Length: 277
Image 1 (cartoon, one colour):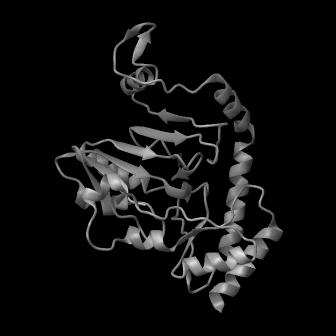
Image 2: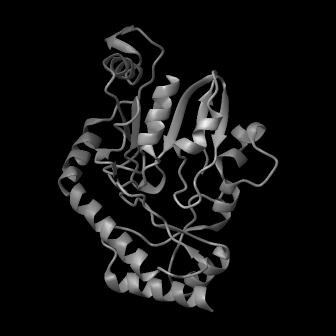
Image 3: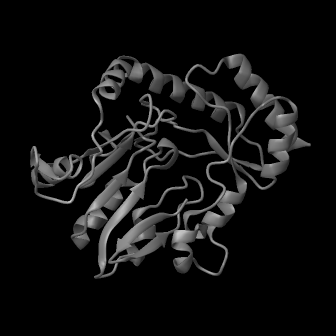
């Protein structure tokens, strides 16, 4: 849940906004110091994380913005695609993502020619020519079969994005006005791609159990905030954070491009009944 500012060797957690689950420039600004090396913005659930504001903030402090767009293929903010605001945009092609490969895969985009050259070396053993390495790199090339599969998927990608947006709009309409249910919000100028449809409910576990009894599966993304995981425990605050509260309340509703209207109606009717009784 918590995005990280890279400050020297010490990560600094930035709390997300309650409705979007993303960081904003206003929230990140007080955390930037002369030791800050980069700002990492996660476009969680396919929603833009204030890329215009964060890009301006990073430019003012002369630090790079790194966009984690693993769940945000095709999302835009102010007419620009996510991944194009920072120095680097990172995408995942894991099989559960909106643009998915057959197995693990990903891509990094940048408009910095020197950085692009360095990244190309790092993904190929650090070698420019066979048997001659310039950097200590890795083998992280996307193989030809994955690339061919992704290329074929591109033909239907815009349609799938439109389907996701239509399903999200239907959920928003059918679930509006429930006092115990917080729906995701979309700022003006943002066009998310709805990797997931995530709501909040203070009685999340009871709601999940009720839906499960009706044969409606749900999930939790994510049950443990980053700062409560072992690698970052040393930097975790001792008090309860907004991320803790979010992780306790979020529930991911059934969501995929071909989800039928009948199923959506059934899901929404069950949620309304649970929230109003």
